[in-house]
Image 1 (cartoon, rainbow, N blue to C red):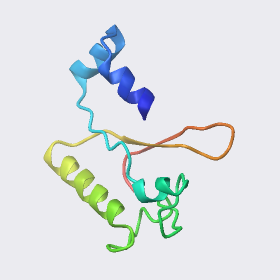
Image 2: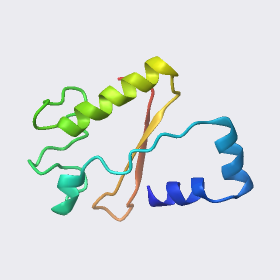
Image 3: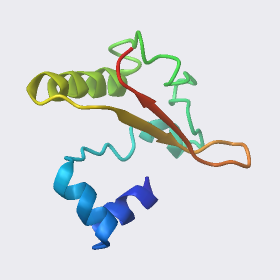
Length: 103
């Protein structure tokens, strides 16, 4: 995410081109409570947030519930083409990117 932010905030011709044509909405960290304890994908309860995406519990995965609500609002208000889930990983390759249009 840090690289995405640096790229979008710089004044290169590539970032200017993209910013003129697209709106970017960034959620820098959804898994704050898990990251505090050294988890990449699991929240403080030990639940893999990616595996809870389709049916999050409103108490235990409140961050997912709120993020889904925001994405649904963005989709209904102005629409979006895709979103990326960027996160660290414990393997040598340390960034994964998933694009999703709809569940």
